[in-house]
Image (tube, rainbow, N blue to C red; front, top):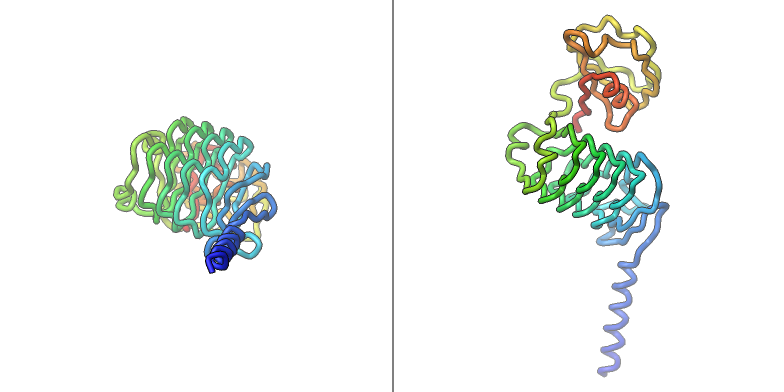
Length: 254
C-alpha cells in the first residue's frame, strides 16, 4: 500500500515537473503557468525588439527575472501588453539600450530592472504604474526623457523608491497632451520637401508608424518661433527624424 502511494506521489511529481518544463519558440525560452507563457530567457540578437504577446498560441503572462539582462546588442525594446509586473534585473547591463516602452497595465517595476543600462535615453511608462522599486533606474546616466501615459496626479502618487535619481531628474512628458491638429494618413510612407512648410506654428502633427522617409525641409524648422510638435510612435523613423532635427516629440496616448 505504501509502495502504491509512493508511486502515485512520484507520478504526480513527474507530471508537475513536466508541466513546468522549458519550451522554446524561436529566440525565446518559456514555461507554462496556468495556460500562459512565462518568458525565462532570450537568445536572439535583434537590436530593435518587440517582445511578442503570445508564444506558440499561449499569451505571454509574465517575464522572468534576468530574461534580457546583458544583451548588449539591444537598442530598443517594447514589452507586450498583459504584464502586471516588470521583474527585477530584467534589462540590467544592456549597454546599447536607448529606449524602453513599458506596456499599459503594468503596476510595478522591480529592483535593478534597468540598472547600468548606460545608454538608456527614453522611457515610456503607463498610467497604470503604482510602484518603482529601488535601483530600478540606478546608474542610467543618459536618461533624459520620461513619457508617462497618465495624469500629473497619477505621477505624483507613484511610489518611487530610493536610488532612482536618473528617472527623477529626467524631463517628464505626458504623451499626446492634446489631440493632433493634423492626422497624416496611415498609408503614408514618404513626406517630400516643403510638403507642410506652411503649417502654422505650434501645430501638432500625428505621424503614422509606416513613414520611412521625411525630407529635412518638409516642415517649418524646429528653431522657428513656434515649431510644430510631432506625435510619433516610439522607435519609429518619424521619432528618430524629429529628435535629430530638434522637434518636440510626443508618443501616441495608449
